[in-house]
Structures are given as C-alpha cells and as structure tokens.
Image 1 (cartoon, helix red, strand yellow):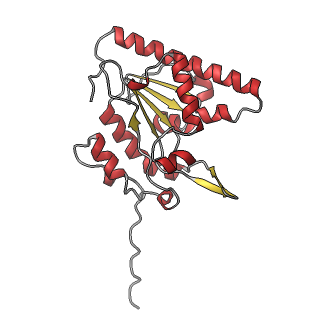
Image 2 (cartoon, rainbow, N blue to C red; image 1 turned 60 degrees about the vertical axis):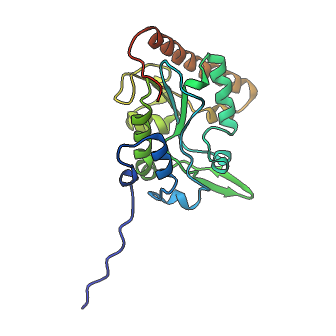
Image 3 (cartoon, helix red, strand yellow; image 1 turned 180 degrees about the vertical axis):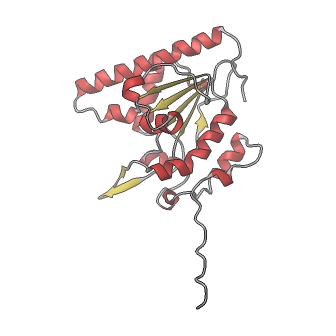
Length: 231
C-alpha cells in the first residue's frame, strides 16, 4: 500500500513572518500578506497599528484594542469607527495628547458574522489571538511604549494572562515586561452597548477617569527621566 500523501502544513502563527531587524514600515508591509489564521479570508485587509501624529519627545503611549471593526476593516485604519470617535472624545476629556498615542489591535483582521446587509463583530478565538499575537509583540518592541493601555479583556488577557480581569483591576498601574507601566480599562465599544443614556454616561465617565489616571502617569514620567526618544 502506498503511503498517504502528506498534507501541506498549515500556518498557525505569524511568528515566521516577522522580519529580521523589524521597523514599523517592515512590520506593516509584512503584515499586509498575513494568512496565519483564517480571518484573512473574510477580512477586507490587514488593519495594522499606526501612530496618531508625528512623535514628540516625552513618554510614548500605546493603546491596544481587540480587533478592527466594520469601518476599520474597510478603511484599513484602526479606531476610525464609532468606538474610535468615542475614544477620541475620552482622550481629549482626559487631557491626553493624541500625537503621543499609537493605536493598534490584538487581532489585525475583522472577524464578523452576517446579519442581512450588516457585518456584526464576532469575538476572536484563542487560536486566532495566539496566531496574531506576534504582530502585537513586534509592534511593542519597535514602538517601545512607556505606557501601554489595554482596551478590553481580549487585549488585557493576551498580554497579561488569561486570569486577568479588567473589572477587578481597571485603572490600576501595573509593572510589566511590555512597558514601564500598563493600565487596563474597558473597550470603548462596551460603552456604546450601554442599555440607556444614563448608563452610557456613567460608563463614559468611568472610562475617562481611567484615562485621567493614564494622563497622571504620563505627567509623572514626563517629570522624571528615561522616557523614550521619538522613533
């Protein structure tokens, strides 16, 4: 009996795609062709992280969400949809300069389910998150944030461990291998899902309070020494 033909190996991690001596431009270009998990088949394009402006001297801040949404998937940019607009509002209220902020997501393709003409967000699986995580880890190494903010449970658990609970530790500064200070809070999309205007207002206020804590940390680092220089 002849041997069964071997099945082609299936790529289950983006790790082999990370370029040597990575830079932001190298990572973005390499990620554009990523097929490490099946989400590339249904997403319009890879949505890589990006700085919000020209980096300035002072502490660097990285915000990490879960995945791009419908509008982000179409535009190819993170946080440009309803969640991004709410994030802009909250950052301004907290006094955080967007030019210091790099925004990205844990998963780089939009996972969705169809409901008529609409594409509805679907939570990525552990396997999908694990496959995509090397991109985020490489972004962190290149950007070298002083302050890293995890927006929601997916980002927080990907970087801080599955046992981490945002509800128990939100807004609290933590030491981490990923940055000088890590803070976790909710994802802006959770505020948009509030059941009524009063609940939404309360959730937004709590979110801004968490970001004000981040602003205080940024100020403290600015007054001290050792903040990273611009890229």
